[in-house]
Every structure is written in structure tokens, then in C-alpha cells.
Image 1: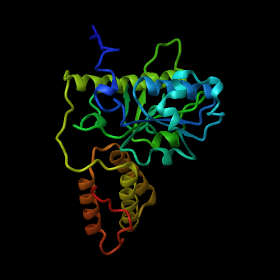
Image 2 (image 1 turned 90 degrees about the vertical axis):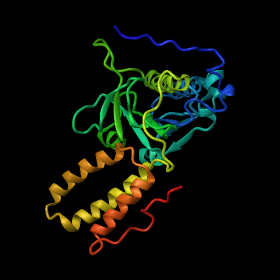
Image 3 (image 1 turned 135 degrees about the vertical axis):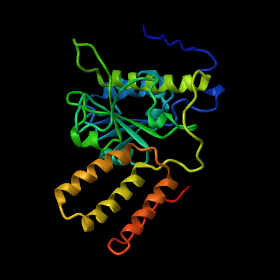
Image 4 (image 1 turned 90 degrees about the horizontal axis):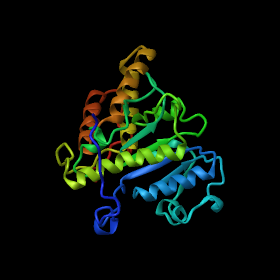
Length: 277
């Protein structure tokens, strides 16, 4: 049998004013090319329900500011008031530590696929302080494409029954936010504690990991004579690096190792070595 979860909705614990911060202040919801303003409004309402302030759209195909589809809850939601629009997915997630693509795709194109479970031990749940996390959702009719999935550090699918293979976009947002909310609630209440050690350095952002990967790519061009094999190896390293729990001090060490190995071939790229603050 499966354990049941009970949470004190409506109690002082759920009220953000008694805690001094929003429960999912570290989470960002990203909708890629949403087609209907109803789904955007419903996602904003879901963000408000689960105390997430950060909602981003990538190339929306609808009039996302159409007030006709807003309830009083979503119109006043902080996520709606702070809504930002981006031209591409990379721009929307580059300053986060982890990005999770919600997708039904499986196989080699999907990075580190897992099933949504509030009890799961995942990299962004293994720190004593929350990691910046983007939850990425695709188009209503076709979801995320392969390029968009691979731009994320992790993949996740929401299990459904055999009668319906997928959820409505806004419903999927609700389920995903609820999953993260339950995990944070459980840790806050003391039922479980985050694993891992306390670190004095922040976790490396995606853009900082990508800077190291660019340097590695340049180094491999000078040391690996087979382009096809080099790209295959680099793809494996890229998947590992993007989903890793590396902090800026550890990434600085990797830059140092790469500099030492390539001192006679590849000069360090300006701005590629992250600072530690």
C-alpha cells in the first residue's frame, strides 16, 4: 500500500506571512509557446496557489495579457504582475541551476528522465538551501521538441492512466508545482531533512556550466582527431555537467584543470571562469 500525505492547508504554517518568504520562491515556471491565454492565466493562478512568483513565457502564440480570461486570483497574482516574455528557452533558464523538462519523450534525447515524486532524492533537493529551479512545459498540442528538452538539465514525466496519455498544460503545471511544494513542506515540518553538506559557495548556474563546456569543446578539437567521436564524447559530458550538483568553487577547479591540460593549445576564454559570489 502507498502512504498517504496530509498537509495542514489553511493553517498558519501555509501562510507565507508567518514564515517571511514564499514557499517556492526558488522555483520558476516556463511555458514554451503557449497557444491559449486561458492556460497562461490558469498557470498564473497555480503559481499563486503554490507560492511561486516567477512565471516566464517563451514566444507565446496568444494574447497572454488578455484580461478576459483572468480570475480575480490570477490578476492579482505576483507571478502575473511580474510575468516576463523571452525569445528563446535558453534565455529563460540560463540563470537557473537546474531546469526540468516535463515531457513524454524517452530514450537518448531525454536527459536523466525521472517520474514526478515529492519523496524522490533529486539534485535540487539535496542542499540545505533551495536551488534555483526552472520547471519547463511545452506546447498544448505537441509539447517540447528535442532541442528544447536537451536544453534542460533533467527530464520528468507525469504518469497517467491508459485512457489519456497527457494532461492539459495548466493541469500539468499544477501537478508539478504541487510535487515541489509537498517536498518543501515536508522538509519544513521536519518529517525529512535535505541531504548533503552545507556549502559556502553557491551552485553553478547553467550559463557557467555551458562556458566550461565551450572550453572543453575547444580543447578537444586540438586533442581528438575524429570529429564524430569527439561530438559523441562531448554530448555525454554535457549531459553529466548540466545535471550535476557542482558549485562555483568546484567549477573553478575544473577550469584550472582544463587550463593546465591545454596551456599550449587553447587560451582561457574571457569571462568564462566564474567568480565565487
